Length: 222
Image (cartoon, helix red, strand yellow):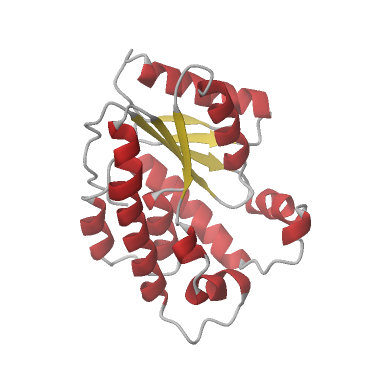
């Protein structure tokens, strides 16, 4: 796995990103972080890809149906990467320029994970695009067995009948693990309690905000 060469954050704000499988627990963690930080800081909560992609026919086809014959997956990946680039440079960075803390539900790493999980491991263009994307101050990755993640998704009333490509989920999990390791991310197993998981998130974020140390790769697995 090759490291993404992202540009450094030179703003007065911070960027914390949350990635992992659907059902990994990232939304719970980022919600708790937002509620905690907004007591003292101005927070901008956002999500990738944006609705411009999420509501597109090609995206919905890949999310909601096993029949993808009408599309080349690269076309969706390019669409999502373009959306993320636009979002980072025209939304995320301007918010950080104002000194805000940006918390993002998914980030460019998810684009890479999906591309590789679908077999496009030799594509170079995604690494070139990444050079124009700001690097998070901390990139959190949340890991849980696929079966647990899917069970959590199915427990949601609105998603109980959602199509899920199980083979893809196993591949995505492995890609997220590899991407986190290669890019100095923080991997947290959500097999732990919510409080234990969040304690790690909070510690990492506070150290960065308090400027106590330079980020180093850490893994918290059980």
